[in-house]
Image (cartoon, rainbow, N blue to C red; front, side, top):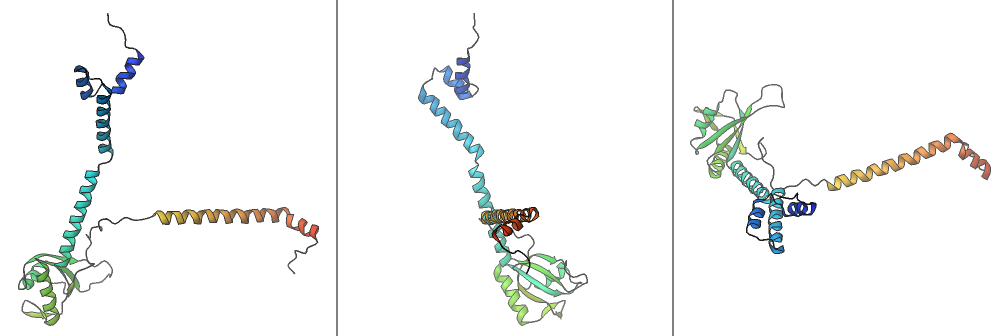
Length: 223
């Protein structure tokens, strides 16, 4: 006849983690030594630590952000900013005009959000490599920019801060500890000064300074 398990047996089974597959296999093989239990405990603990602290995932995210930033900087080096363009100029016109200097990858017009009226527009032109972009800039600085056989007053310069999709700099951390500490100190100073002024106001309302002045023979009048 089977007897009900005691609390001691229940606690021992719970400590061993009887629900784990490794524990059931170990019990079936008769392995119940302290060394084996310690080994299984360390294995489970390491698995839990890996689940709580996914260091490999964090490292992959850092490497991915570095790669994205490097690709973006390479894109900046091969991009040219064209400004003082007419509103009739399209991406196809710019691409056909710059194909004599190299392969144009992309043309993106910069929207005007600051001025409410129409002004000459600008465009970011991405070339195939940095050498072609440098060639476009040097040529347009020395010669008039020809579009459809006509010279245009367009200007070219390297594109540096004209990107709305700039990724964050990898490895940069916003350090707010000093600001938080300073804010806490300032708050404590304000509270301390407020308590002092509040105490002075209460003393004046109670008439204690006048009583002390009469006791010591002092004159507290405005004279």
